[in-house]
Image 1 (cartoon, rainbow, N blue to C red):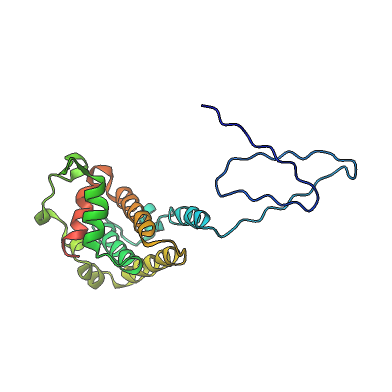
Image 2 (image 1 turned 180 degrees about the vertical axis):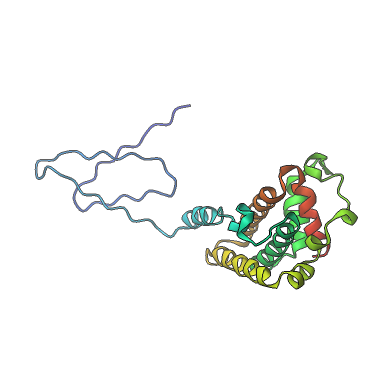
Length: 206
């Protein structure tokens, strides 16, 4: 159905508060005193704006996941190892949940289960821990073999975590957006078809 618009006329010195994300249109009209109009917008630090800012600021993915050539002699093993370390660092810096709980409960069970059973889509149902790459399961192995790269990965994960922690949003909202961020990065690196199985590999030893 249609929603009736509310029309407000503002005069010199008037102020109108609009809650975040409200649709609105402004029309400047001539008046007897002047032939021009000046309007000033001030954006509040409301919770809704904080949420909007956090979503926007967490959409950016680390460059080495977008451009594999960022690392010297890149291969899938290197990217997968960096992925596991990045996610483990990010989770430990943002939430009180363990990596295993974040992945198995906040992502796998809530997003890939239908009627209490794991979906066969995205590799969830056919997951076998024994087939997980060791460098994905064990970040210590990755750090030992790639100490300089590991330092870069951990540093960028901590920078991203600061964006979460500085938002001062409620814990349940932070965890939800964190789950979105993790799922998006994993899907980008390993493809949608392997996203769930990759996530569960990360959770194996966490």
